[in-house]
Length: 326
Image (cartoon, rainbow, N blue to C red):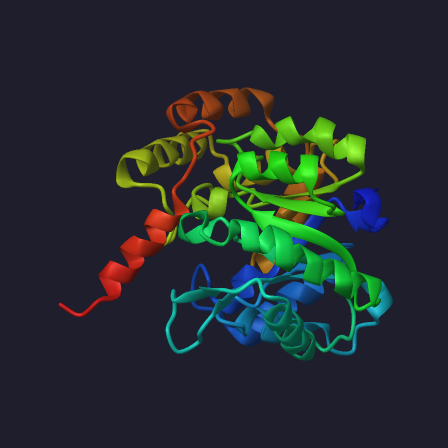
């Protein structure tokens, strides 16, 4: 496993890192004992950075990750969680966005309790573009200030943001004091816009974290989850790319993790799995060379959806309507 410095955070993180959303059953039903083994396999094979959020699985991801890390020396791993977006366990999909200083501080205490730690290496301000960006200015003012205060107090190590829109990333890089940025779905087989941020991030020593190498489930070889904003017309291109890889006797998931994680300009790439064997597979694939001819063919198939901006707000609304009683 290679290790790279994550910008001004100073953390020397593994090139492949562990996103813990899967531990909370975000993609499928999860066996807790298996999920804990998945974390231990990652640790044993050199992964030292783990990311989670209270909104994942309505706090379940944090709870399971905390159980997995219990008894592991704190020097063996770096840990990040998120603040500002919270999901009521009794009402799945009903997210609360709250970027107030009081709520961030109190709910970060809850996160630390679930994770079994008294210090978080990085906290990302989470998904403040949701709900039509109604909370964006609040987040960038009071929310960022709350995290910076926690950093000064020594309770967290670094301040970051975890969002989706590229225009907001550019604005933050230009005008907001952050140590890192978690950029999801923008450096994978169907989207390479993260590359636009590299010069700005480098100039300001902002650490870039690449999330969602499998395009939030579109590039796993299985059907993407219902909550993914890609409509049926878009999904057919991903099915075609998956089938092309299968005809070559290869896995689109392998190509996806290799493409996303092997760019030396990007310090670390987060993947998520609650299956120990999948974790092992991803680590092995990451270390093998990418098939350049297959990559070109797959990206040609995906050309109609290349760099497409997904509407996550619309997807949330679709799920809410689907859950309403008839």
